[in-house]
Image 1: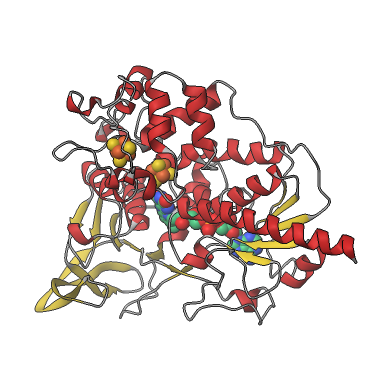
Image 2 (image 1 turned 180 degrees about the horizontal axis):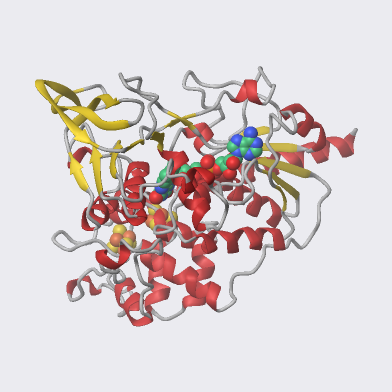
Length: 477
Ligand code: FAD
Ligand code: SF4
Ligand code: SF4
């Protein structure tokens, strides 16, 4: 093994420097600096090059982490980039926003007593360096093929599938109802986690490689699924999940109670320079307000931190379990706390107070009872413990469900699960309709960017096999 590795014994784990919370609160820029080159080399060299690398096993795209860490530690960055991009279509994006504490880094089995290797930040460093040096090139194919594929949805799943299909020479048409490429990368995730030009340069790269984008094109409004099937040889559905889960509580429907994604989209659009009347009117703007966010996932963390940056007077997060049992990334919770967010653990909403405009969330204290069939302790109300949390903006971040895709796409035969997600074969990603594949959140339910990428790449392999078979059959007949 290279003498450059195994330095975990002498070197502490380090992340790139984080800007001071007081400075972060004032803008929407990313909070981590880039690694200095010598720091990236140093941190990569902590890896002990495990025979069975659990970091790789638990990375959804099975990145060859030990090898690209070794190349980075040896200063062979261009090769590190080639290797890292061979398994991941958006490595600098995953490096920024994967919950590494639950995936690669959380599974790093470096000797007991030492903290895990820094993986995500090194992946980001490798790819950002590749962009700076012009090593990232469009995937222009060597041979152009006649067959075409329609991808519905330009989020990370659709982008990964488009990249892989185009590489193989197919004519790739991506349809999206939004005016920009990126899905939740652009309109959901705030720019303090992922700056928008990082997504834009990826979208441009795809277009430069010959992917055709049809933006402001909503399937269901501008075409039915069957119309697209007539035009294209295969379809990949990657439409994500957007229907906000709701709670019907007394006092719902008043002004000042808003769904999380509306709130985040308005903030992201404003940051991109769009006109957003609901932001300017104050409806979707936390400036000067007491804000309560209900929920404990990634979306809730993004809302509280956005509210801080918009100049909220106070920001509280109401969650019915405790810190240890939050679904959101622990790293993001810590960032939120540093930025001044107050967490009201073990508390659930019971009602909204107000006389047309919300003035408080009525909440009740909870305790964690016995575990359910999933092993998670069930929160139980503590009788007589109700209290008010005053607010003039209440943001509901309770998760997302799929829209009714068969009705929307005018395709009642498309099979969906009882939760409304599209049923697709777990390996081939094909739905019950011939030549129609589905990937990402619309199959998994609300999940992660890196899983959508994995699905997009897997679907590209299956769609290629499918199209090859169709071409062979067409020749034979
Ligand atoms: P999406 O990204 O949702 O893209 C779907 C696309 O399909 C959209 O562009 C949409 O406009 C388009 N579309 C939908 N319907 C139609 C139609 N009828 N016609 C045409 N186009 C259509 N994951 C992480 O890994 N890390 C994070 O930090 C993180 N933070 C998050 C924060 C928020 C606020 C949210 C909401 C999610 C977050 N996620 C995070 C989850 C992650 O964003 C999603 O899992 C991922 O984007 C799913 O990718 P996708 O391609 O399946 O769908
Ligand atoms: Fe870790 Fe995500 Fe990169 Fe995989 S893709 S190595 S899980 S940051
Ligand atoms: Fe290196 Fe940790 Fe992966 Fe082992 S598990 S190869 S130490 S990063």
